[in-house]
Image 1 (tube, one colour):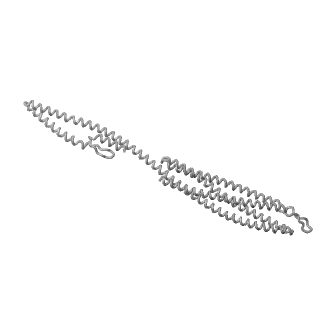
Image 2 (cartoon, rainbow, N blue to C red):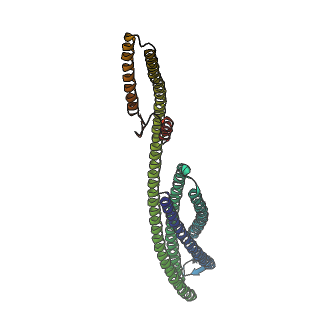
Image 3 (cartoon, rainbow, N blue to C red):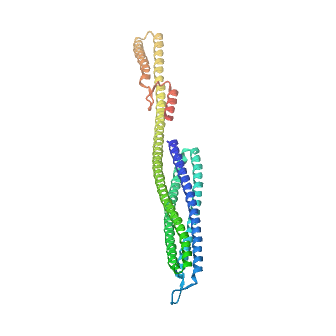
Length: 387
């Protein structure tokens, strides 16, 4: 049972290691994607700076249309300030994403260290005896709870990163639209003169090419967004699988704890029952020893009585041979000799029948012994009591 549980725990840890490796690879891929997005933002910052420089060149151009006053061609300062604020916000969000990515790397490294520690602990558990399993089960439960907390935080971080990526993409689309509007305004304002129109046509061609490039980039970003969503779904599924496995493992460990407690209680009850039986057998052995001692004393007293009767009979017979002149004494001697012989003959079969009546019996296994084999009977009782 213990080997099976250890094998299941080892398989679960191997599955977790594979899931963590997939998460690590996904993290590296997202890091590469973030670097690519940073490069794109850098390119767009350069484009915006170029546009600002171009707008700065056209800010102080005064044109006269007919007899009217001169008109200043250029964008408004409020629009430029709003664009600068948007760019600063995007940079701040990019820095936040990099910070979150660094935190995720640290989290992954910490989880790898924890996995190595868990593997070492599993090896130690295999080498430990049975009486330390309860402590190990408690420690594994606390470790599982900590791992569930870390997985929950990781899932929250993944969702927050996905939301931030969506927001960045939407903001990039908004900045692209604002740039296109600025270019359209510049094109409308440059139609006042022929030289301005030639420059506008050149800029329009460049802007069209840039807008097509930006559209392709936007499509790429949308595709990457879909891929990231799919990866986030895969991560959530893997996290759910890990949780289910951990729940099953907790249930098996709880069942093992219940089995161990029941076994311990049954063993303790058996020990108490055996101890009580040993005490009872000791008491019975003590009583049997007392009975044997009493039987030995009674046997000695019975052996003394026939001997006395035999001596009395011999005396009476000698007197009868010496005093043949006394018929009354002879008759009395004969009468005493006959009861003495009858008593001797009756006492012998009674003594021969007594071993059958005084057989010794073991109170536990009910084995019978002759009263002559007292030492063997006592040894047998002690062995039964030990069993």
